[in-house]
Image (cartoon, rainbow, N blue to C red; front, top):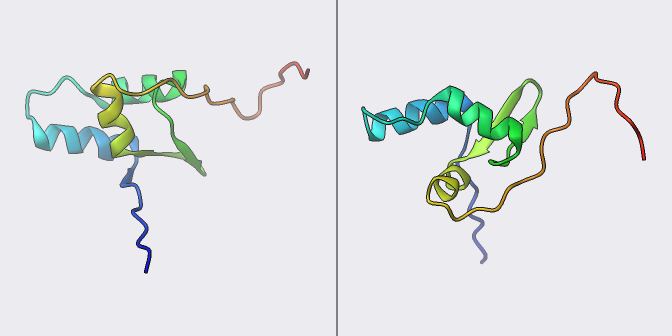
Length: 82
C-alpha cells in the first residue's frame, strides 16, 4: 500500500513561532517570512485570507536549496492582460 507524505503546512505566524521554538535567538521573523512569500521566493498556497506554507519549503529556502516561485498575483487589482 502506498503511503502519502503530506507537507507540514503552517501559517506565517505559526512558522515564526516554530523557528522561535527551535532557536530563541532566531532572526527568522513573521515579517521576514511574509516578505519572502510576497516576492515569491517562498511558495505558498492561498486559503482564503491565509497563506499556507510548507515547513520543508522554508527549510530548503533557508538552506539555499530552493528556486524562486512565481510571485502572488494581488486580488482586486486591475492588471494588463496579454
